[in-house]
Amino acid sequence: MAGPIRHPIPLDSLTDYIRQNVPVISLPLTIQQFGYGQSNPTYLLTSSNTGAKYVLRKKPPGKLLSKTAHQVEREYKVLKALSEAAQDLPVPKVYCLCEDADVAGSAFYIMEFLDGRIFEDPALPRVTPEERAVMWKSAIVTLARLHKIRPEEHAALKSFGKPSGFYGRQVRTLSTIEAAQALVKDVQTGVEIGKIANFDEAMKFFSTTQPKDRSTVVHGDYKIDNLVFHKTEPRVIGILDWELSTIGHPLSDVSNLLSPYQLALEAGASVMFGETKGLIPGATPGLPSRQQVIEWYTQASGWNILPSEMYWGDAFGFCRNAVIVQGITARAARRQASSAKAGTYSERTPKLVALAWKYVSIDLLHLRSLGC
Picture 1 (cartoon, rainbow, N blue to C red):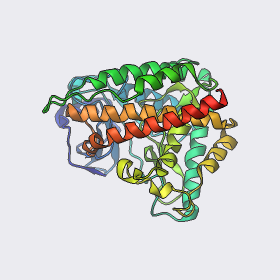
Picture 2 (picture 1 turned 45 degrees about the horizontal axis):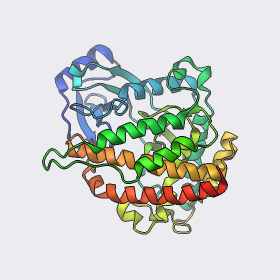
Picture 3 (picture 1 turned 30 degrees about the horizontal axis):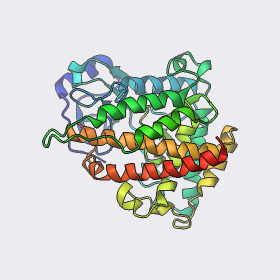
Picture 4 (picture 1 turned 30 degrees about the vertical axis):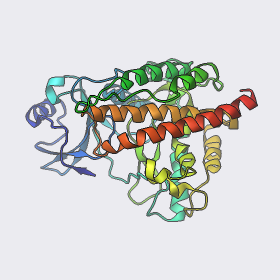
């Protein structure tokens, strides 16, 4: 999935930095850029001498819209801390963090390259039905393993967030980001991105009605395409893209992972959001049901998620994803987008926003009927 470079890196200064700070990497290097990575440009480094491969992730070029996004420094630190706190958690090894923008144009870090499989389609095509079930179980059990880490027991993790009030902070942060992104203008047309319809009303509800507070290490964007599976075996060997990791509510990760199941039930979802129709019940042999995945999580984590909590998590997750997609659209308008597919999100944004509010409206009515 690595190919032409869309965001150039000064190879000479990068090579000098690696020579002085990361001697384990044999020089010279060839560089390619991955097609994925909506937030931070991601590159494949290959040693011309040994053939060894490494991954470099850096902040986008230019002035950034949000101080809370593109935190490659945070990503490096959490990967380093987790590798020390939980040896059974599959996270890539990190080699260095460089915060000197003069080296590569912006802050970056280098980690190991995991030679495995990445699936954009959560229905996991091109595997047997038996493997499909085991792979989904591996994905959710790996998440439960992350959530069982006690941040208060590890000095390096305690600083990643506050031990309570996660969703309240999320509401405030998302509101600030949404307002800033709405004002972004396309550099060619001058047209503003605009506010997300009904967003403020939804945030008002979420600020006053929340599930029981819980606290653990959360990934922040846990989903199938952020996992690396073994090349031939049905198991997770790596979790990628940790820039949103914090101390927070585990429901946020669970609902994010399971959101494609909800999208699959929407007419035209495969056109709007990529291949999700394979998750329609009965469409893909061996694919576990959403409820089965939740039960696996309960068994592995020891936390029984209430149906009302999942409803709330779904509603909040769709609003949060609307802000994320709004951000991708904003970066594309400013010509700062990292992914080769970023342009397509401009077309999906209004449809995703409408779908998000639809789910919020349904879930709010359900939640009010439950009195939660």
